[in-house]
Image 1 (cartoon, one colour):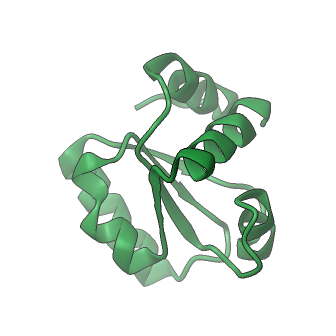
Image 2 (image 1 turned 60 degrees about the horizontal axis):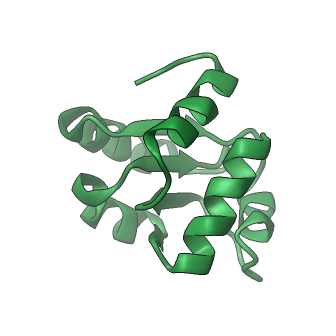
Length: 103
């Protein structure tokens, strides 16, 4: 979980992220990692998973709610999906291996 927090905080600080399902859907191809909270709508989740599969982008299912993900991003609102455009391959692999799956 530490690697995930670091990558999110770095991306937010560098403004290399998109939040919200619509924004994330539009930026899948330029993203390195997509993080979905467990509160995401199942239709949106399916759309995002199809897009990420085509673009070969890693998807991480955040174990917390959209409120917790919002707090992690230092935002005062819920975040169901966030696309990260920064972070090294090693950091993203570390996050994915924490989850137990890789790309």
